[in-house]
Amino acid sequence: MSEIDAFKASVETFMAERNMTPTNFGKQFAGDPLFVFQLREGREPRMQTRQRILEAMNAAEVSAA
Image (tube, rainbow, N blue to C red):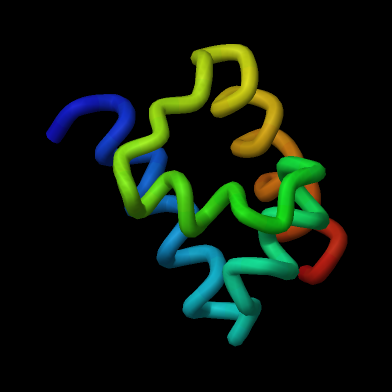
């Protein structure tokens, strides 16, 4: 599995575990309500963007625990 595929899977899993809509995820973590929809269509965010989103997701998990 490529790094971008792993990132996409992480985003989808995160949303599913929290019953979060793609629009809400995009607004909260990427500042772009279309982020997940574009990701599903083949958008490949820069490494810096992916890292920032993964860090925010991890921080959200820690604060929820």
